[in-house]
Image: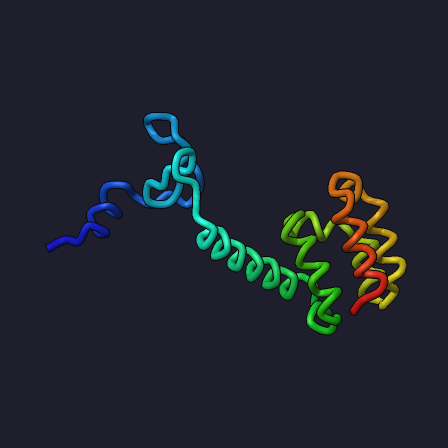
Length: 135
């Protein structure tokens, strides 16, 4: 006998990106109506943990020196990768070059010279201070 879960998977189908259902509701997954139902805090935290893992994996893949940094600076990079995406973070070439050579003051300065700093305001100021001063 087919379970309810199996029936819903078969009828709803899996969509990994948001789409509009026939009634115009924003939907994802196996028919989750985001407009009316949204997600729970537990679901949001689950997604966040997956996104953090994805950001850190990307940093390890793209920045061979990532694991040699102290935890505070690894967290700054992960925060930026989460916010900007890996491609966006990799666009901070001068910051990354300064960081790799251990010039944290220059790396922090490069962070503040960016369009990102203007857009994120206090986030950029806080992260650049952490980059400059470390743990």
